[in-house]
Image (cartoon, rainbow over all chains, first blue to last red; front, side):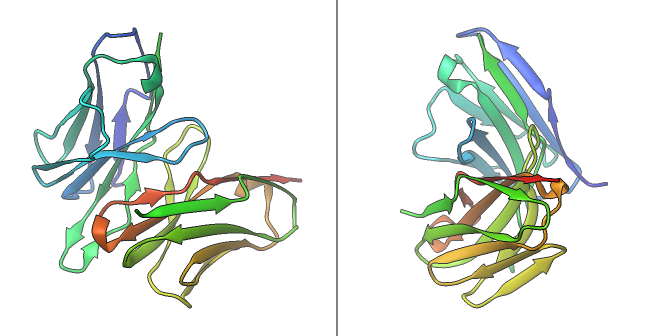
Length: 115
Length: 111
């Protein structure tokens, strides 16, 4: 089955220690997204890629960076995690064609704990 | 600014007790309203897209409807396996390809 896979499912890091979360997809979608979801809150868009074009949300902290080396993979780097960055990080993909964007297809997320 | 508000925050039903979840939205140029289901510890799973007022879509015990200001997710004769958080999201013309989510309604269906 075509899918979006996030690794690891659970990640524990120390305050200030850089961490990288990964996402891969077999859907061959040209758009990839990173959302942050804190407990009982709405998922919040951090940034997205349209092919290799990076689009940052205005309120995404500089502490968050992303890389998309190819169509299948996307990484979220948190340079200096703070306690407030503990959350579920969701990767999603979509296909953009002349008809518009397909519904987002999500991975199962990475739960980040900062100690 | 595009905005989505869902109510209630939590809903407890007995098995077979039908009810509705509400999603109120403000958006400039609605391109689509989306419903997702999210189980604990998992990513959201796509349910429906609605594009224009008056549109309705159904899937098993779920039916989604859309007006110019809100959407409803009607759950008919729910079963315990329908327990989940239901998220509503909108895509507007000023944020093409980006979904703005509500905080969700957590539904618990007791046998």
